[in-house]
Amino acid sequence: MLLPPLTQIPPTIAAVSDYEPFARARMSEQAWAYIAGGAADELTLRDNIAAFQRLRLRSRVLADLSGGTTRLQLFGQTFEHPIVLAPVAYQKLAHADGELATVLAAAAVQAGMVVSTQASIELEAIAREAQSPLWFQLYIQHDRDFTRDLVRRAEAAGYQALVVTVDAPVNGVRNREQRAGFVLPAGVEAVNLRGMRPLPTGSAQPDGGLLLGGPLLAAAPTWQDLRWLRSLTRLPVLLKGVMTGEDARRALEEGVDGIIVSNHGGRTLDTQPATISVLAEVAAALEGRVPLLLDGGIRRGSDVFKALALGADAVLVGRPYMFGLAAAGAVGVAHVVQMLRAELEVAMALTGCPDLRAIGPGSISPAHG
Ligand SMILES: Cc1cc2nc3c(=O)[nH]c(=O)nc-3n(C[C@H](O)[C@H](O)[C@H](O)COP(=O)(O)O)c2cc1C
Image 1 (spheres, helix red, strand yellow):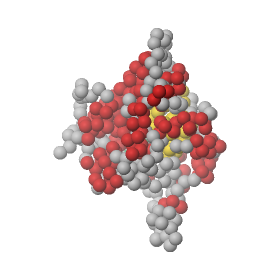
Image 2 (cartoon, helix red, strand yellow):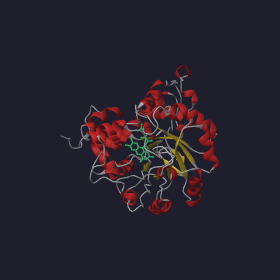
Image 3 (cartoon, protein in one colour):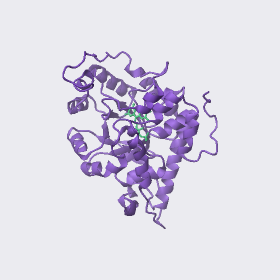
Image 4 (cartoon, helix red, strand yellow):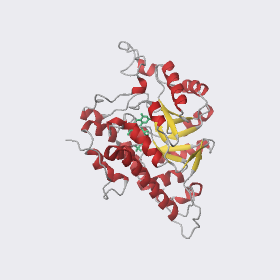
């Protein structure tokens, strides 16, 4: 029996991880497997979190913290703090209000929000409620005409940037979902992809494997498609899913406006390294030429701080706010962001950093680097 969402936040919820049991009790076993799980043995999923936990901070005393702020600018937009809600598909799985609850929370806590191509609510309806920076996450579809129309819809609805996710041309090996028998329940679908022409299935590939040589990978996006997309829109284009210096440099050559270091929260290729452990490599490749963001494993405000110290301008969080959403709807999402922000501010104060620019490699202890 699933419990209804909380109407009040219990005082025992003091940290982001405290939301997990409340979320789990309000989701089917299948939905829980989909949202909480990762690929294969979930080594990357766990390592994303563990790698943050291994880093240690260097406190500094007696610094002048007057006039401090967490504000930053990205692509000409003002963000009150560097915590952005990551694109997460099918949010109606967590709460009946789905993405509409999330966008309401984003407005309340002035968080940027990235809406997934696979949102369970029309992208226009979400945009109408937005009162904080709003970006659209694009999966380049096998139907490129449909993809172009999707970009046009996002532009017309007022989205201010495109986040092109490139690390998931195929689904990861999702054993936890398989074991739980996850399928989308009735009433939850990728409504923004309605009407797209289906992928030609094709018969068995004479020379190919199960995937290789097949229609799915034949239609998968390449750098050429990124160039096409770049020419299609005047919105800033961020590439999400970059994990190496080589790909970051190539992305720069192709004219992207920003990079998001991400391994999709450990949901695609298991045994990739933790995102925080490749951040320095990507930052070195970018040489500060475009904004750099990171997601994966952020569960504490001190994790936000660590990502900024190692080169990120801002971070995204996925599962933490989904747990807040499942437990308590918009209030839960807002509370999760608020806790992360409060913890970030404590870390800043105790490391002598009055603003985000002051956070740097010197804030991390080399003893545990
Ligand atoms: C349930 C779920 C669905 C997701 N759906 C998408 C998606 O539609 N598009 C996308 O770019 N990333 C998607 N992601 C990845 C997130 O944007 C983000 O990279 C990841 O959740 C960050 O890791 P974290 O959950 O540890 O914060 C999804 C993640 C989860 C947990």
